[in-house]
Length: 333
Figure 1 (tube, rainbow, N blue to C red):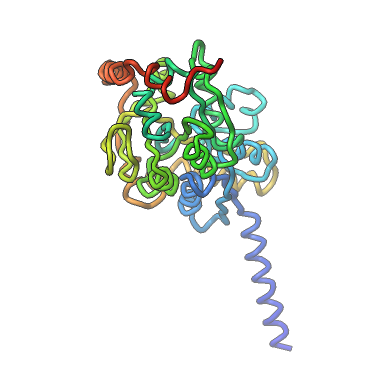
Figure 2: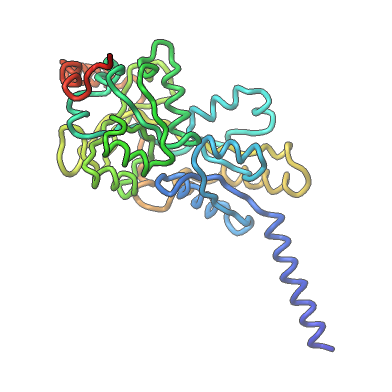
C-alpha cells in the first residue's frame, strides 16, 4: 500500500513538472542552420533561464518567422531590424506584437566569381550596370528577400533593373553562382568567421564584396556603415585571408507577441519572458563565442562617417566597369 502511495505521489510530481514546463513554454523562431539566427535563438533560451521551457525553432528566416508568429506557432521571432520596423507601421500588427529590442549587426554582402566582381569593380558598378547582371536570393521566406525588396523599392533604385532569381536556400544559391546560373548572390549575415556559409563560398572559389550603396546613406539609422572582417572569405582584389572592409549593416530585431494579446497563463509567461530579455545584456543574448561578444560590444560607425572616402574609392574601382562586364555578359538584345 505504501509503495502504491509513493508511486502515485511520484507520478503526480512528474505530471506537475510536465504541466509546469508546458505552461511556461516559450518558442523562439530562429533561422536556417547556415545562418546565425538559430544560434541567437538558442542563446535567448539560455538567457531566459530555468523558469522557462524554451525551444529554439529552425525556420527559413525573417518572413517565415512572421508567418509562424501570426499563426501562434512561436511566441518570439527574430527578424531583420528594418523589416520589423516596417511591420510595426501596420496598425493591426502593432496591436498584437512588439519589437522587444534590437541586437547585433548583420552585414550585407554580394558574392560571385572573381572575374565578375573584378569586372564590376565595386557596388557602385553593380548599381550603374544593373541591366547586365542577374542576382540570386536564398528563399522566398528569407530575410534577404525582404531586405533586397526594401532596397529595390527605394525611389530611383537601380536594383529594380536586376534580373532576380529565387533559390530554395543559401547552399542552393552558392551552387547557382558557382555554375553561372546567376551572376551574383545576395546575403546578410552576422559576420561569424566560422559560419558554414562563408566557408562554402570560399571553398567554391567565389569572392565576396561588401555592400555600400549611396541610397542606404539616406535611410538614417536603419543602415550603419561598419568595418568587418571575415577571415575565411576571399574579398575582391584580395587573396587568402580577408582584410577589413566597409559594408552596410542592419540590426537583428527580437519581435514578440504582446502579453495582452494572449490569454491566461500564456500572457503572464510572455510578459515575464519579455521583461527578462529587456533586462539582459546584449552580449548574453548572442551566442557565447568570443567573436560575437566582441561584435556586440564594438561601436558601429555612424552613417556618414568616412562615406566620402568610401564613395571616391567605389567610383575609382567602378571606372570602365561596363566595358569589362560586356565581355563577361553581353547586353541582351
